[in-house]
Length: 346
Ligand code: IPM
Ligand code: MG
Image (cartoon, rainbow, N blue to C red; front, side, top):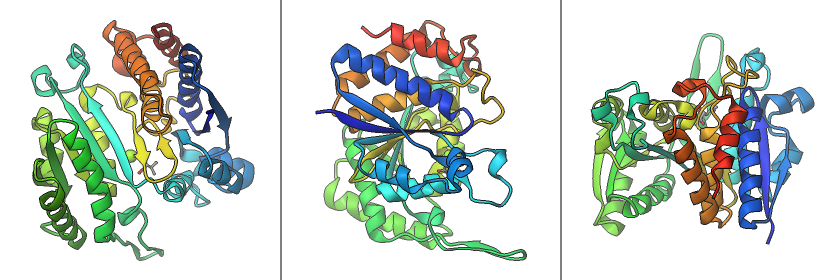
């Protein structure tokens, strides 16, 4: 059966990396006889310019009935002037699709340690899966924005914590059996509920998983001092946003890191980097994060794990033979790197 993908290129380097992922998907589909359609829709700042809204109704309808949604990136200084924000479109999209679990794998490829800003022996064997709650917390609480006062409410229900924690425990089961849950339980009420809910779920259903609780400030430090000691890291929406940017540079560049956001409906796939307006339009963007996100899409939403394997192998081959964009010390353009990867499909 033909699988329907909606492609939201977005802003900045978004169209460049989404285009790379699109080409890779078409190449792997042709190679492996997969039937895919890719439907491009307006999103983010580009949608604001065209329609006034970052997540127009037509885009929402297409996303809601897709098998998976692929997103490049959104945002940029052009939309910083007090009008509608492109990022609001992303929050609306994540809420509309109900993608409450955001998976962000951070994996050090053997032999690539020198690319990391940290010492080789610190980053050797780093293999972390960050599971970030994506539909709640301070991103979605009531906001008050005045000239003299402002507030953002952070709220979580036990059910919201349990459903994302279950995904993280399950992931740990299929990996090395360890879960570090990150919170700020020494200060925040939501964090104390988080800790209680995760502990109870672990006891009730995942007795074989080694569960630790780590305060978010300590985790910020440990990700730099002992990153290879972590397996799965579970955390709430904003802590996950911050820690995943930090963790992504362990392997050399945020441009390498993919993500999958999962719920009960269509999955959402996006590189974790932003729109990078400083390098947009210069053919410098690293397409690997987007291409690996496309691999996650084949695996989790499109029932094509062999396609995912083939893409991951090709990316690994290209990187290990020294190919790369400038952010990882290479000389290739976005398109050249993409072609290099496609040429390695066996
Ligand atoms: C991310 C991004 C988004 C977030 C922004 C663009 C709203 O930083 O996906 O990590 O904060 O979730
Ligand atoms: Mg972020």
